Length: 326
Image (cartoon, rainbow, N blue to C red; front, side):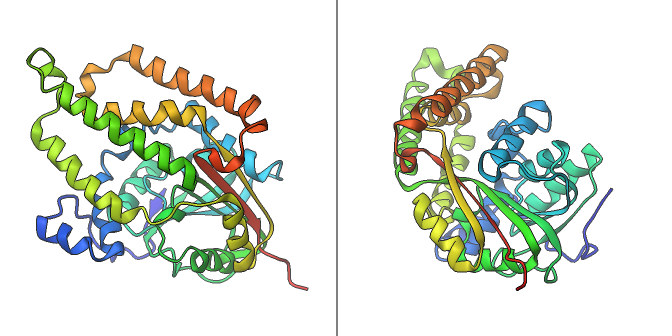
């Protein structure tokens, strides 16, 4: 059962920003966050191949375990910060990590979709439209706070981590995953841009015309990309992120990284998928994309993490604990 504690007082989603709104957002990062993520909300799960079945349950639980290690489960109440469509928390709940949940996001569209997904899964989750720098919950409310690919969108990350620690109960834990490293973001963005440019150029050829998305869709994607440059505010060195969490007041802080070879495949694959009509990519493509990512993730975990510096991997994860009172 799902409900919004504000009983309909949250702002409505705005999935079709005007050119004037986009122009204003280029100078206002929080407006850009709302417009960009409202624009993406209804298609976000498809864009990133997000599901709420065994595949993504295992992925979410794997990220949690990789950085937090063995923990007594389940946590009683969890919060997902910058929830998007609820991918991380909902799959963690299905994976036995938490019993009940709350979701927050600056984007009304994302909160709407996250609550709809929770309802469809029969999970006890409520949600609010909220700024991660001023979390609208009382002190000592949650046993666990999680987030996936959210910290790099927040203007003041350390302030947000202070807020996370405030709403955690003493001894409560936070786990954030899916954050871009500085080096990883450089090569991933380069690969994405090169793939987009090559695909959109090649599909202009007459004999490949049916592999080209309608120009209106490509133009809208380009407008979204312009906002993406505004909403992606940070990349992280793993050690610097650990120091930031400690400065915010966390203890037992630990960062881990993943996806090096897997990212070199994943970014071109995802960009290609966004540039061509989805009906052109059948079951065989999906099997190749997921199988290739899984195989290279195994190579990263079993081989490359022992020889490649952690800062070269694409994703960084961070965990920490709210200190018990002395």
